[in-house]
Length: 338
View 1 (cartoon, rainbow, N blue to C red):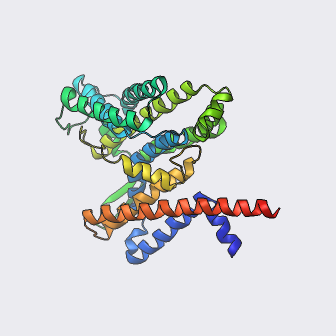
View 2 (cartoon, helix red, strand yellow):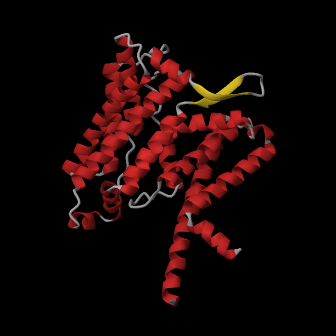
View 3 (cartoon, rainbow, N blue to C red):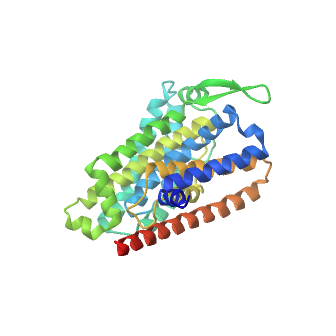
């Protein structure tokens, strides 16, 4: 039994999976309606935008940096794209919106990369400044009017569902195709981080920048790729968000960045860099989404939801840090004994 717990504690993803399983069983015991396909569809749908954000944030954290401008980039790229497509009367597929918004996001991420790589400024300060700059420019020069009638391609995307089931109130609910956007982003990011020299460079940069430079890695190229990639994902997530709620608002998304970062850290990524997995980050996102949805189902007021989620995130992050120190201590003892 002791070896079983040691194994669970040594594998962050396994540890997090057990927490999620325990939470699901507790919530299901309180509210049996939780164990329905309709609820699963809702949670998967709620995880898409945060999941795409989380994958991007993971890459930044692994590289040893931090980015808090990705929500401002998402809002900027999403709103400009929607307004442009509405302005020209575009009626094509949502793929064009993804390309335009992702390109705008990558361009804004490029600004972050220039400031961070060329001037060697702290990533937190740079992204804090650009976050306010992007948001201020959007509201001052692009517009503040909420677009409630989206281009037809985005509306069609929001209505596309698979495997419909009947809900408790007599309606139907299906699996949103937006889930497949996240399902596409996950393996691509995993492949970059785990099967390419670029990915090894990202981990090396986060682990020890000086050693990475001495090893001959192109630090500037790595940082440019990381921040442009995060910007691209933010632009894509912005379009998904607007499509799902069928509204493009310049006031959306900003303010959720700390929840995303907390979910990724909960998944095992270290703020200090050099460590983190895509699977752990996605599990961290699922845990936060499950907590949010379950509190709503149990009728907990919104202000208590914020407090409860904050407390659980602190406890979860503390447990992850404790588990990491415990694993390190056990490893040292094993080394001394051998």
